[in-house]
Image (cartoon, rainbow, N blue to C red):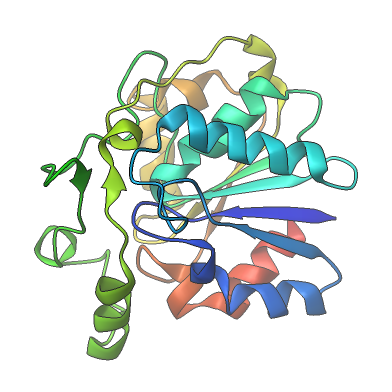
Length: 224
């Protein structure tokens, strides 16, 4: 099966370099995506551009793909389900939740010269980055690509309620399944509260399991 891999903020397709061979060994065809504005040099890219790139990958896949979104890109994966409810086999969200209709995609940190740079490690101290050693932190920060303002501040538009029929798997890294269930039940994640098929899977890692637990993450993706 084709498995489309979408990295979160500041990441390009190379974030999945260690997951790809592990997934291939398990019999699947991983397709890591480098999004407009996050690896292709398009500083003026918009959220619509990124959605279009994801949909192009969905349309090019052999059969119905599994669409995997990490962190903020969980919303991109969900937007793919919204636009192609009959063309996506499953959506996998790793350490992230889908943003609701009409809200900004990822307006989390200050913009500098029209883009949102990686803010350093202070906002991620604790469970998010606990399993990253200094070498991994340096590598991630050095490779981080500022997210264009048109992406970070782009408004999410969800239009087709058939997205709620697409099965969702939420991989829980720095938080546990019980915590996630609580957030969903309390209404903090309305999109997942309305989804008809949601499975929660635990992984013992921080926020970037593709870096710290790539083989285990590949196994989870193959199983789901």
